Length: 281
Ligand SMILES: [Zn+2]
Image 1 (tube, helix red, strand yellow):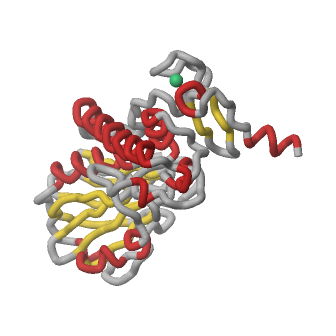
Image 2 (cartoon, protein in one colour):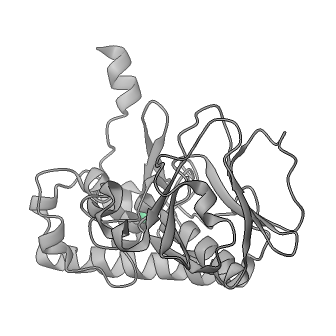
Image 3 (cartoon, rainbow, N blue to C red):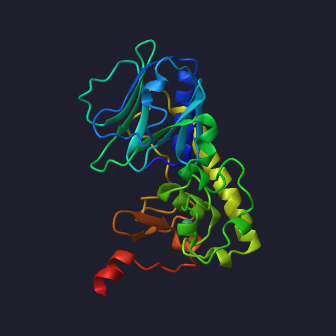
């Protein structure tokens, strides 16, 4: 699932490559991913792309004429810029923006669920859009102090992925950040000591910043279907911890997995495997 660093690099690369381009046509083939009807998609015909911004895990594609497309990839969407035009039979396509010079910006979605969406709004209305208005502060580059931000009696693993609390982090990068901060994923926000909150904020900014810099060095257009994410903890259970060398462990949920190092994060304690404990009930 694309999270803040993946959306950031995509927005940077596609934004700079398409700024100044003219939209020749806009289409939503197949299942209609467009969740708004006024202004209509045809309002983009002849519009000029001004650039692309990121908010949380969302893309904001700005056009002249005071128009902005808000794009949410959800779990399996990709935003890609192609030199050649797609045939309409590309069943993964949800939005096609045909640009001058034969280029095409395509929102594609892989897998069986079709949940990625697009909203075409008037630019001044973007901040009031319900998903955007409900977002917490950005996790990068300069989030507020975590002591205040995360003060809720919920596990950090849930709090840090809650887009209303802090925007941009998902299941992959939360494992990496909590490991970098040496804090248990099940510690509650209200139990965070001041030094831990500061360490967690620092680890968040550093880890996300490192990854974005890494992508800046290694990713170029066209954005690949699957970005090679430089994960060192997430989905690495059974492998040695990159810091202490002990074995990384995991807690399995129905359709995802949380990874951590018992030595670095939980004082050696193994967290309960939710999948197993549910089966045993
Ligand atoms: Zn370790």
